[in-house]
Length: 366
Image (cartoon, rainbow, N blue to C red):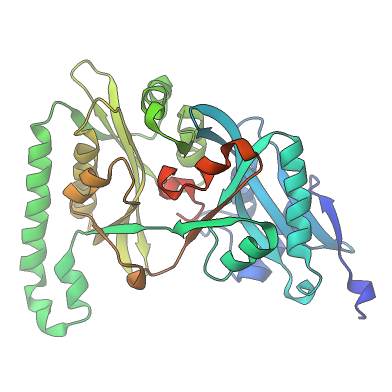
């Protein structure tokens, strides 16, 4: 096949392209989109988004085949004291046989033109180490920082014993002692003026009111109202997210924490997906973390993971719950955050790395 016959054409997504997009994903990444459910079910959830969300997908095609994609999903953002339209970039891919045709910047620029025309003010994403340089050089993104991760050991002796056999005999005793410490944290939590408990995944109007009270001091964040939380956690197919809430003496929602307990690189890991608390309930973040870690420890969790920039509003409370920032050299995967402002009026906020309020919920990784 000569080069001319393999030249790609660009077009917008059309209903029915899903199967060919999924086929390209499997070919490009060598895996399923989500092993917890069918690929089409996952695609419909991810790109279906919240009710009424548009599909922002530019495809490169060759004949009937889809050989490239640049896609974002709509994301309502809170920036500079008001709600604006934003987007999250994900699942960029190009068939290896067509990578010399400069499709990546062509697809990106075409999509960004549409985003700007439709009032989308910012695009952000979490490119890996292999793609961050391309997206900065070819599409004008700014790299903000490497995603900072903090970890809390739940069964440290078991983790260490995996490398040092001589310590294996001490593992049951050591982990029992550490579990006891977590239970002490949980007991201290009982002294605080909140009722903290795991509850079924459901997000009602009380979560809207919590978001409205909590957003006032945030500079840039994805909107975390009931509609977003319901889509992100309750509607994701076959994904066992779990919800812990804190309520005050009047029965008002003081804060919530969503976590996921899953195997990650051979360790049962508690991912702190999202945490938000009323600004006037200062100790609620610690109470929520203490409960989530106690639950995870009882169920065999070995380590917990949270995204934790030093500028994060809950940084002191996360440290107090037993988390420690992980040095970059120890990151199992290096994940960058980058952004592109389509509106110059908000560019200074978007490019201020200390302004971002982030959690694992903002990514499409967990």
